[in-house]
Amino acid sequence: MKIGIWLGIIISAFLSYAVAIFYEQPIHWYLLILLIVTGLFINTIIIILKLQDDHTEGESN
Image (cartoon, rainbow, N blue to C red):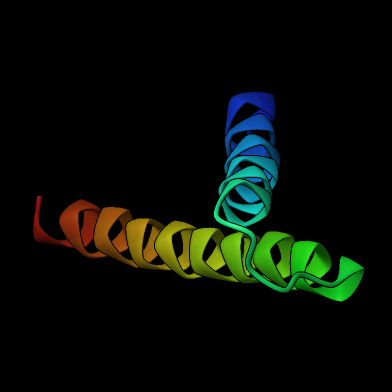
């Protein structure tokens, strides 16, 4: 996994945390961790699907 993806996930989690503070929404520290874990989980699914797609393209040639 590239470093840019990690940075994008972490920056977007902090950005959403900042938006919640700006709009005075109730926030807790575990929500930041949940956002990061969710981003990594979604990215993992995308990587798996890309690998499966590359594998099927290789068989058809």
